[in-house]
Length: 260
Ligand code: BTN
Image 1: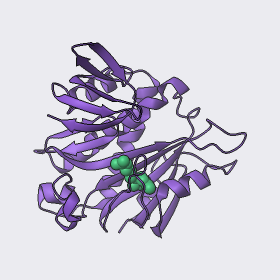
Image 2 (image 1 turned 45 degrees about the vertical axis):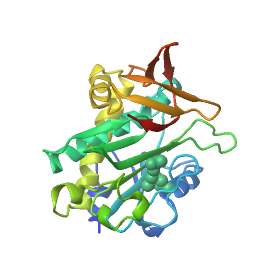
Image 3 (image 1 turned 90 degrees about the vertical axis):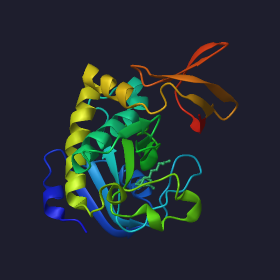
């Protein structure tokens, strides 16, 4: 499924762990991040996940042909200070769009705040960022988990999911090299995380122009309440801006439930 040599020797990566099958690459990356001398960025890559996790209590459905991996990052090494951690997910979303575009140049990709990538209005990728809390080492690593529907045609997805997702192969009508998609994405992650650390305006421009919620009426489940309003886009700090008759508010997280 993967040609491991060019992945292992990718200039940005310091460590690769490959699994034919695993529960969740994020779970394994969380475990691995407890290792004191783990070289980073460390990549945990799986041909197949059988217990992939999404945000909250969500599961991540993926059949063979999905690209699923997690990176263990050292925020100090990549020079991303704590106040910018909430932007890692959006940064990864922008990197995913930049990496997928060359494979499907006529497809309209977008970022659905805060952690999804859409293609032609359907979800093609999800991101799960977690911070391990190993005693004495809290805040020393970030886990960036990414799932992308590449060759797992969404036509075989469970009925209830079919209308909301898509895969690269469904958009282009052809199968793609998983190795090439991953290598392109590692390049883009390196570039875009570099832009995050430098506060590079090109990154903010990208997430603003890719925001699929802008101009739409949205409802965001914040846990304790639902925020509703017209989305005015994503600001430079990565917050979603909602305008409503009672004023404007900036949201830092939540589940977008309804879009009109
Ligand atoms: C979401 O859509 O809510 C996020 C989905 C994230 C899925 C990826 S697949 C690789 C990594 N391992 C996991 O268990 N989850 C993430």
